[in-house]
Image 1 (spheres, rainbow over the protein chains, first blue to last red):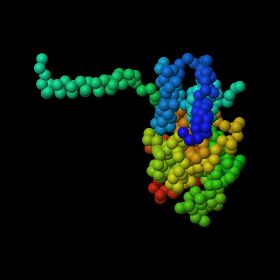
Image 2 (image 1 turned 120 degrees about the vertical axis):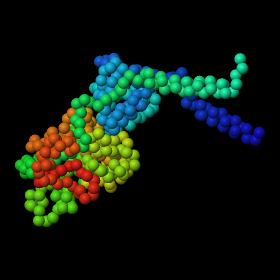
Image 3 (image 1 turned 30 degrees about the horizontal axis):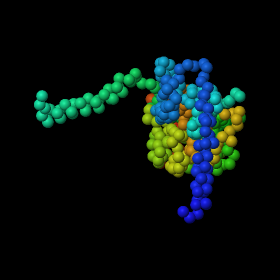
Image 4 (image 1 turned 135 degrees about the vertical axis):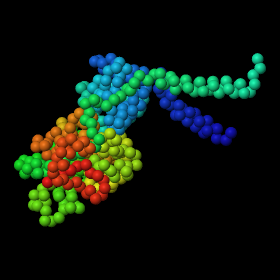
Amino acid sequence: MYDAKKIVPGILIFVVLFTFPLWSNMGKAAPAPKPELPKTEKVCVMDTAYMKTEHMVLLNQWRDLVVRDANRLWVGPDGKEHFMSLQNSCMKCHSSKVKFCDQCHNYAGVKPYCWQCHIEPKENM
Amino acid sequence: MEKDRREFLKIGGISVLGLSALPVFQALAQEKGPRYKPDPKALKGAQWAMIVDMKKCWEQQDKRQCRDCILACHKIHNVPDIPDQKREIKWIWLEEYKHAFPDQAHEYAPEKVKENPFMLLCNHCSNPPCVRVCPTKATFKRKPDGIVMMDFHRCIGCRYCMAGCPYGARSFNWGDPRPYLKPEDINMTYPTRRKGVVEKCTFCYERIDEGLQPACVEACKVKALIFGDITNPNSEVRKILSGHYSLRRKIELGTGPNVYYLI
């Protein structure tokens, strides 16, 4: 092989650099997000498992129900009626965006654009 | 047991039918009545309309520079106060006679009419051109009550609707509107808008759906603004219209505006 003195160290340097994120983060898993749940309410508008995975689908459904079809009330799993509104309903119980929404969104690296228009509650920190 | 082809196909067909019916049956079995409904307090009408009694309005404008309706509307809906006229956002605003009624304005009209500004807002047309041109159906005519609505989530900012609207009722957000809102004045129960969407008066759909009158109507202390269902012959708007001669803006365009002016 020609130029083995250059190629072999070159390959080695490349492999080391390429795998840098893997070994530099070895054994340092980012802590799992801990969204703070409201203390006053026990039941959300759907069951917890659904809310964990599908809340964005539900929010889109609410958006269309409210804006386009003039529906305002949602019947929860316990039969309780909820006002369909991100700002006036969701954020009344989940009163801190930082302690609730942002926990998982930051962890998962998603940036929902809800808050470009909807006003987040004032944080008491 | 011997099976012929005919029998095999019969059993196979029935089994396939049964299997495909199962998920449908399961979905139907889970349904426990509707999960959503309108607020029972919501106002009901087939076509909302508004009357602007300019005589009463001008009295107040002369007396105390009254802007109650504009202030109430713009505060409740977080409409920013942008000083640059090219970028301003307005839902309800004042305009001269000759601009409000260019088709019927003439120089010999009474001084009062010529010199005093008219209160303008979205006409919530019966045949809205803005809705026809919107490529995303972000603006649409709400079927049950005829409000020309904006779904800001869907607006892509193409501004076709602004070109389509002959009344100049629509404003475009050239930039983020939030810096122009005073933090202490922000209504925390209503969203703002973002850069790149068109906005306009929505006849306070969010208040109507909760059984309240539009904010401007509520704010007007002399009842110069009257709101009601134009299709209901017993409504206040119809009673007033049958007793007074009224004007509408640019009716020759065939948009069917639903805001009436008394002068």
